[in-house]
Length: 341
Image (cartoon, rainbow, N blue to C red):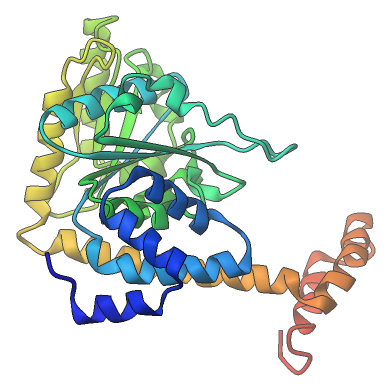
């Protein structure tokens, strides 16, 4: 495939190491892909500038993968399911990238990053790329640079991207804003807990998977019926798709083909109407605004006057001598003393 003139021009603007990085990613080199993701995850300003140049050059080679978000309660078997699905997809001729996000400690900031150890067979396949990343305090159960990492994986030729997210909670809905299909993994003995599940999570689920159905097939069918009833009481997010429920056993690799059939059915239902492409366009715009908010927050914290005033005002608020609103307005005034904050 010949490179376009625009691509060649942008590539020539890159420094030699970054040109080599772009070439390596496009060639599907796993080491180059890992280095590129490390670059975009760096908090150094010079690295961030380089990362955006690399991403901009690779952008025309992105967008061709199916993007799946997979979430579920702890113990639902997300890693086992992803491994079974990944091996199935590779056997079908696909290339799979898994972006597995581990929670970071709120005390130490550390993260175990153990997903590779839970996907022993999948991580040995040449057609699979597994990248564990710390959430580093980001809301939504995803790392701050997960979206950029998805684009890099697509540019490297991976045609199925899976984002495995942290736990289940209201903020988990963030992942639905970056994937084509959001999958919620549940257990067969969770029927009595249906009312406790956050409504926001249920409303954005495009597919519910009952895992470990082999343990108690009868209980799995009961839970499946309960979930179908619950989903039918909600207004579907898409006029072209009604969320469904499938039962599987990831450990025994049963039902994986039925799950993938639902994924393809979903894509085929949304593509002809243009909804699939519209969803990605909306996500791109939302992504831009999230980055703007993140950038403004970083700029605010780095402002010299804010850095000087912040410790003292924090103590004033904590002691009750200053209201949080007054402190916030006072700090924002440092950005522009003449503003009407």
